[in-house]
Length: 360
Length: 221
Image 1 (cartoon, helix red, strand yellow):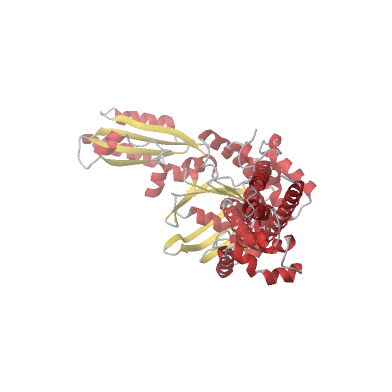
Image 2 (tube, rainbow over the protein chains, first blue to last red; image 1 turned 90 degrees about the horizontal axis):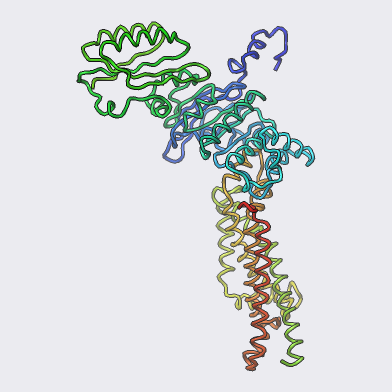
């Protein structure tokens, strides 16, 4: 596009912040797909902009695999529009999809490397399909192996590599044909936590270095939290919640989001959770804070509240996309509800959130 | 064993090897594409076509159900048309190849079907077409099984070629029946059996070595 045009001021501004307002790479409009009686996708609409990392999270069977396969035409929707880089792909025949798929790299949970080919031949395969001469293919393959830190494994076979190394080869292969979009299908689900972190760091680095747009599906909130800019929560074939990772993590609206997040956020200790009811001597409340909200003021207010016989029972402060996100649970004697209401008002004014969960 | 018997034995070895290798190669060249066709046209295959798949499967099954000795006789007109005669070693190659082809097609089919579907999906995702999938995924990934299956086919052909004595094809089996069994020459029988054991072991050994060379699915030191 005319990104360097002098008159197009709005566009050149958007270049400074590629994750906001960049051009659309993916647009889905009311995409539906059913398999016999089961509805896999029930009217999905979403947009992914250039340079952005979108995390699509959901439980198994939520439709996320079908969704990501629609993006490169491995799966065809029953209805709806799928637009990739301004071109509708949902009605294209297999033969017409083949050249377009070269613009879309994909990595897989089980890596899907060809066991009969060396690492370099695996990475060079998309280029062989494209029809590049052998010397160019290998040069590009070595360039990419260098990028993923596996130059010394070019002649090895996949069976000789660890899981993390295999996924690095998978990433190198997905990038070989210089795609505009990278699809990640549970790419870290078969890896241990440490390897997962290194693979996610690599994806983030590639996203920054090459400005590559990434759509990843996962069932692990941690993955989304670590690298995504935006998250879409999918449940029963619908996107039930969508927003910046920070806002969704700090204040999840839907039950499904809360339950997917439960491992990542502090939660009420079991012994209180089980006793939680509508009557009891103490009130239980949760407090959610986002952003660089005045910490000193908050802890001063909290201390003042707890001085009335209350106690802090659980809590943590974390950082998402570089911003603090905190969650605390407190109890306070039921007859001190007025004090709690005062804290709620103060927090509310500062953009934080207090919720009374019940009595114990 | 007399000198004549030794000469007979040596020419029988050559006849058996000729029948086995020639019909084996034909069954490889014809059976592998058939096996590919079976996998490609099956449900979810790269060229799904259930009708073609059913018809192909039925024809292959029909050929496989006919006992070889019957096939040998039934194919005499075909053999005469192709080779010019219905008798002798060369004439036996036709029914042997026709019997081995559907047999090998099924063996190849099993190996090809076992290729991980994820690999096919990965190559589709990178823009590969049907031929790319066959060339870069199905055949190379199934190659160890394809070779192992060919070894099995060759060994089976050695056994089947014994029956080809019925149309004067000669070979080790024929020698064993005519001299060892019908003329009670135990020495000939034992010699033939030993040669057959060596042949079978040799083919199996070469096949196993080749498979070990080709198989990259497990880490190797």
